[in-house]
Length: 558
Image (cartoon, rainbow, N blue to C red; front, side, top):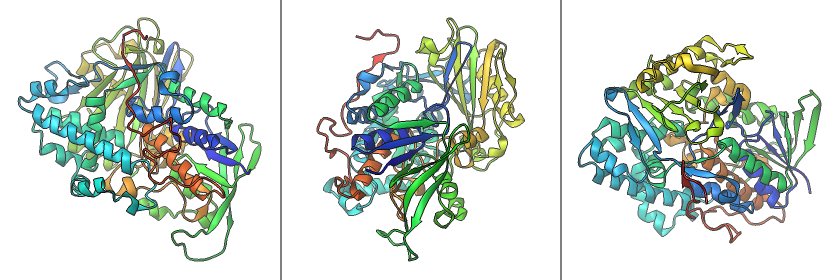
């Protein structure tokens, strides 16, 4: 059997490599960094440990589904804790009052406090989100949309007018019609940022995100998302995947099959192998009949493919890269009772905030941002009696902003002036809003990341933090598919393609790729174009399997 090569060792790459190996394929995974995880990075210094990527553990049944496909389960591999509260919110226009804690399952009571009488509207909103989420899992997430007519089931046809309205309206507009209180609007609208979009550009379809955190709840794997990466790596290696880190892919080889117009179902070429360079500079070539690009799609299509097969740069000018970000990792002496595990800081003028990001402008002195303190749940992420902070400041996708720096007891390496300026402002804003006056003086360890870091570390197009944003024209069937229609044997996985951004989405994309490979491989199993609930492994069941058990943070496990 010829080899299958997976480019990229992030969640999508690991997940796809594991599933293809389970199908009996000989799989090689190549990762240019020294550790696996892709955008889910890790860093530690002086007893402080940080995740530098994803930090919200949502859609647990999707993550558990992948583990079950690999012969295990999330319960067996992870120590999950349910966070109570799910997160804490600070509102600029209400800094003179206490921050608002959001507790999963108790959002109705919270909304009544914020705006009496609004709990009924919230129930309808969340019920709608739950229904759309189930529809999405059954029909629109586990598919490459290769046979759209097969999606026209009675259930989908019945909901078409509703789905059409949710696609044509924005999250901002949908929320504003139902909730006059600006605090409620921000609580319901912030998930758009985690989709790489603004509330006014993300389709209202994504109001389902509020169902995930306000109803299903927010969890955390002890050891952070690095523990999730490590668990996946163990299973992938056990499945027989060979993993090479420090391997920089320099090209994908494609044989031409003649000159003719590209039409659906016809191919212009076929992959024959992958060229890469080991850490010591040694060039390598691996012959392959199947290649999965589980890294940034722009990098794959404009740099790694041979010139005749490359996508023109003009095609990308019409696309939205989503926001970039400035990340700040802080090791802080002493406890910070003013904060919880997840914290959100919302400025009063959201339209200006998001406009600056979209238009590539300087951020205001105070801007909306996210602060994670995993030491509130996971004592191993900080020294005894201290805290670790991870600050994410959404910012324009402008690589010219530069790279971050490192300041520890051993290293003093400043970052670019722009990145450090944003980081300093974020620390000052957090200190003021949360009432931690001496925060800056208590910082023992500091590391920052800027847009240029995401370009160099994960080949992110324009320094995108998450991947192309989920605007209407970049969602569902409008997002690039997982197979290259012009090159036989070439597939794509991860946040650049269907179904989209986020750890669960990347795991779903691995199933979509596996099914596409099955459908085109000689003698392979038939493709499962609508894989939800129809996976051939009866032990796995549909994606709507109940969430894995999680204990409240602070409780002991069984």
